[in-house]
Image 1 (cartoon, helix red, strand yellow):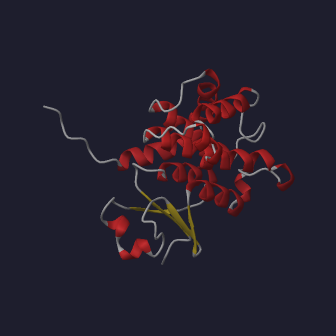
Image 2: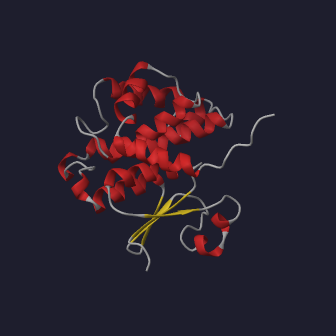
Length: 209
């Protein structure tokens, strides 16, 4: 019998973010680990995500891809977890969730590929410059504990994971606001559980020597 909720993932992917969100939700789920270049590209998975990328979730027949969308969907599908603000209070929640998925990720990706937009291109790019984008997020985090006010939400799973990754790999500065925010959320029990699960799925490293 098919599970009501299935995560398609790889431990070396953004699937780690989706797993953290699933652990926060607390609903039972099945995990299908896919390999790059093989099972991620077979017909069965292409029917779920034609982009042939992970993560994806299937919940009672509904397919959701794109990590920010997965986080928002799960928060709504499992309201008892309290991971989405009340509808009237979702302005910051939506704003910064999609800021992380849009301007921030685009700016980081372009910088990683050596793309630096000139003044004209900055008018076309949704982020302008990486410094502007990072500074905007940093300024917001100076004044609050969490993305959507005083309570942890799905937006923190997504934006927080992104900041852990970007600062850890030197793609963003380890500024005081960033690191204080990361420290507030990194020790959550659901994050620790998710990390332990995915770390255990990582391929074994060959012995040196």
